[in-house]
Image 1 (cartoon, rainbow, N blue to C red):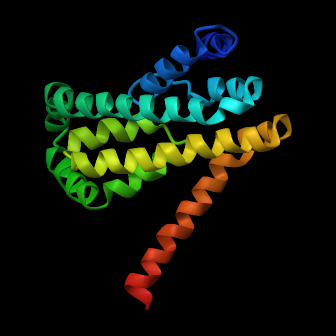
Image 2: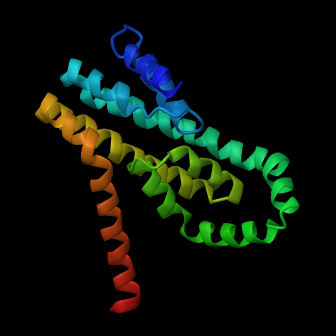
Length: 193
């Protein structure tokens, strides 16, 4: 099933409705869809390198709007579905503890998910369920998603087809290393120095 979804998503890149498809996939991926928008963004930028920034902007805006849907799913459906399950297993207090921690450091988690291959939708839904500050959520989502999509699109614009394989293989790891170094720097400033 995932392979069919992937093939369908890739086929959108070759149609005149590609930008609408890119917006739709970007929106849906932030809240429930399993295929990332990169599978459309990459061939679209390679096909029309001069408009790389338009495609990155479409991905960013649609993804952040989709993240708001994910947040709403977590906020409104968690009470109906998630809380009774936690209560049944005697874990309602555990969720409260995780929520407190997440509301303090959750912005970093959203940033991590926004720029890496980690399923972003997981943290958009969790952010709504825990009540992460909405302004923090939106700002971090904009920064993270813009960083991810504009960097990918720019590299494709600048280097073309050869960079595609590098991006598909290593970009997630590079973003993860960047975030570990960033967290490590903040940790060192706060607790070591």
